[in-house]
Length: 281
Ligand SMILES: C[C@](O)(CO)[C@H](O)COP(=O)(O)OP(=O)(O)OC[C@H]1O[C@@H](n2ccc(N)nc2=O)[C@H](O)[C@@H]1O
Ligand SMILES: Nc1ncnc2c1ncn2[C@@H]1O[C@H](COP(=O)(O)OP(=O)(O)OP(=O)(O)O)[C@@H](O)[C@H]1O
Image (cartoon, rainbow, N blue to C red; front, side, top):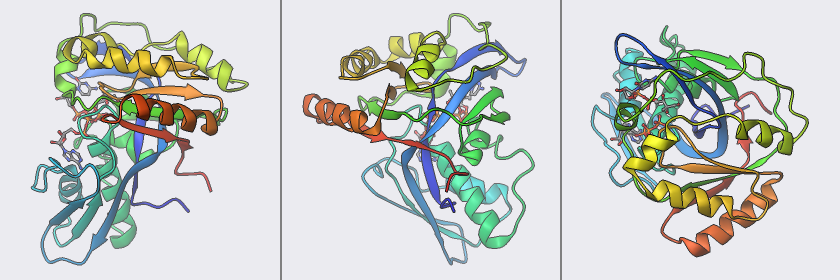
């Protein structure tokens, strides 16, 4: 059984911005997968909402009411709970760290208290929370509320790389030059292998990459470094950045690429990962 407290990194393999609603939120069409690197969340008995944060990425993570973990508990109407969050994912990085933590909190509380999940599956906490609650490969649309699980994907390995520049999501949406772009094809192909999958992904887009690179030029460097690693099939930015990912045929190739990139950029956050799905095993 999948660990409900595991908060995997979210990776937008594609991210098409297809319109904007009257309230300013953008309509998206995105192929989302999860990686087997992430944060770890656990609960402990407490008579009031409490949050302790530890781990290699704990610095700067809020421990007050603004943390999405405590906001998730609030959304489920649960006050008397303590959380321990072990932070491994960089924040404001385009890999849904806070959203995945919120989703893990919802899953844990539903499991331990029997309380129902919020009707909006966490959308009011963040547009990425519903897909993070599913934590399996999905096509995400609307502003994030529509989550359609994908049939099985071919196996592949990934490297995630962040040049340690944080990029606020709202600023990147605000800097988009075009908001009415084409969605992905209505019917997704049945990809034979990682190469065919990466070739098809290469014909799709992340519409936020251009504006994010304008805000954080280090993203361009990250993409070219990933693209130059042995066996790289595709290098692209995830979400609103600055984390970029590269795909490989195998996890072994991804691990070798992560090692060589770490030698070049020991100060970056770099992780090799396999795809993760909450419904597997
Ligand atoms: C870029 C993505 O990561 C792609 O998966 C998500 O759409 C962002 O999800 P998120 O970080 O959970 O976003 P939220 O915390 O809900 O929103 C942050 C800000 O991004 C903008 N926002 C977000 C989602 C969306 N579909 N349209 C938007 O315009 C809004 O200005 C909002 O104030
Ligand atoms: N549990 C949490 N972990 C990290 N940051 C959090 C958390 N809860 C709230 N935050 C706040 O949310 C901000 C955005 O962080 P988050 O990791 O959610 O990034 P994100 O890039 O917006 O994710 P994405 O755009 O992929 O959904 C942080 O700067 C931080 O102040």
